[in-house]
Length: 133
Image (cartoon, rainbow, N blue to C red; front, side, top):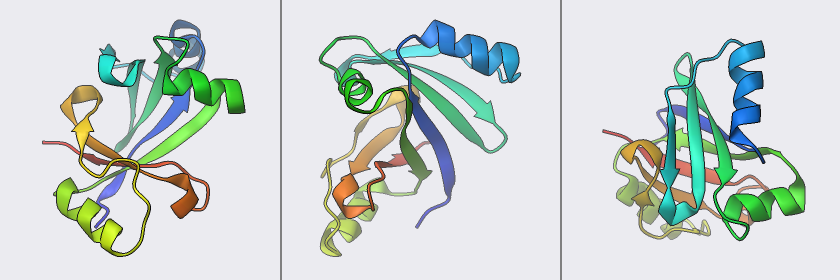
C-alpha cells in the first residue's frame, strides 16, 4: 500500500527565513516555491534523497497552516506517504474504519493528488496520502 515516505510537511511562519536554515545551514536545495490557492499555502520542496522536506507558509491568516501554527507553533505538521491509486486506498481505509478528512483526492503542490487522514484515527499524526505521476 505505501511505497515510501513522500515528504514531511513543516509549518513555518516565514518561508524565506526557513529556507535560509534549510538551504544555507543544512545544505538542502529548494526546487522552487508554489502557491496552492485552494489550501491557502505557499510551499517549497527540498529533496532529501528519496523523499522531500516540504516547508509550508500560510498565505492568509485563516489558512490551515496559520491555524496550526497558532495552536501548536511552528514544526512538523504532517507526514505524507506515496501511494498508487489513491482513490482505491481511500476506499479501503474508509472501509476499515479510518476517519478521512478527504473522501476524494484534491490537487496538491507539484500536481500531486492528495488526501488527508484524520489524526484522531492515526494516533495524533496528520497523515497525507500522495499520488504522483
